[in-house]
Image 1 (cartoon, rainbow, N blue to C red):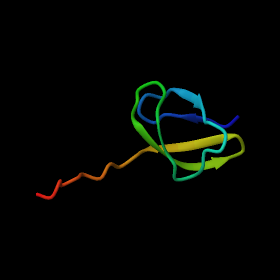
Image 2: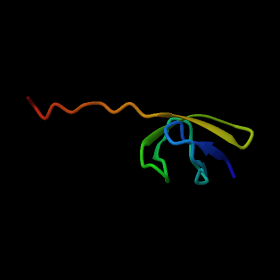
Image 3: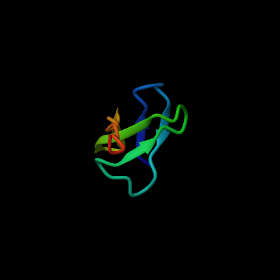
Length: 58
């Protein structure tokens, strides 16, 4: 299994099988959205995902 650490809360968790680079997933501990940036040698890196603001037609 590929392991990843949340950069926001430092919780280590395992990624679901089939997770790919660029995928956005929630941290199972703190809930922040994470973007997977690297998957290599059973270890993954993630960054807090940038959320685009919606203007709702304003």
